[in-house]
Length: 312
Ligand code: NAP
Image 1: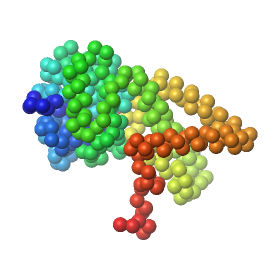
Image 2 (image 1 turned 180 degrees about the vertical axis):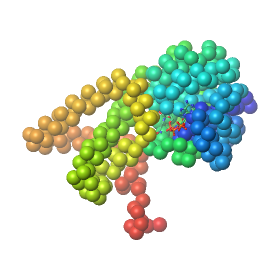
Image 3 (image 1 turned 90 degrees about the horizontal axis):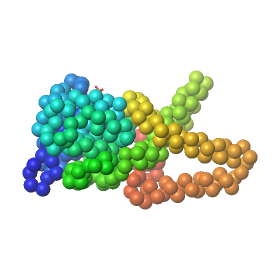
Image 4 (image 1 turned 60 degrees about the horizontal axis):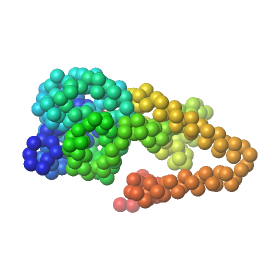
């Protein structure tokens, strides 16, 4: 490792949106880190090579992790255990092994069961992303001003945690450390439930579509359009998130159903005061998100109007 740098070689397994963005961010930073990406798909590897998104790209995971002092798994949550087992024989002594999976408890369990004792397992989750998949959708700036949550096990080496924190900070992220189970509950509320609602609403509209297909499309700017963006997220990734964060999602879904029933009752009985109180509370939450810089205050989420309405 060069002086002052947290790591000298990063190996990312899974060259999709998040994995390739991570390698590109590391390459673009002044951390002087060598970047290697391994992916199961030859066409993904070819794209990464063609575009120069990493210093090296290969389909051979054992070869890829050899000599890496930071290994980050960026595959769907359900594949983490199998990938961990596949790379285990080649991992360098003292390497930090992390991941970017959207669920943490199951990943911690799956990886702890297969990784050797001579590496430091520190799971992580960058709260940044998009509804697009694959290396072509990657961006070197994806993690700038975004939170990256690290969920080290209780017995994790503090020095290894500090190095991983320094790495994320070197690519512009803000780092928070929490317990894996707490992470899963927080993300069930802030990400998993909203996605489930979006999948449901878009599905409901699709069922109505046979009757009102053109209206659903035409008047989508009324709110529906914003749900469709979330509902376009990768099906495999989201299947794995719900299968692996079952308990927390069921817990928040129960609370959501209760809140929904309260609003349903207020609408049925014409209780305007209750509706106004509920919507004032949620408006304040939106204001808070903008104030801490986690979204833009520009009209319509800062969307550019399509031509001929846009002004350049
Ligand atoms: P993605 O664009 O679909 O990339 C995943 C990549 O992993 C694909 O190239 C896939 O190849 C490859 N892969 C799958 N199984 C593999 C295996 N066994 N060995 C090697 N490569 C394998 O997905 P992503 O959005 O980057 O998500 C990756 C991880 O990041 C997931 O765990 C997700 O929960 C997490 N995450 C996603 C977001 C987001 O907004 N997208 C945000 C934060 C965290 P194939 O295409 O050939 O299967």
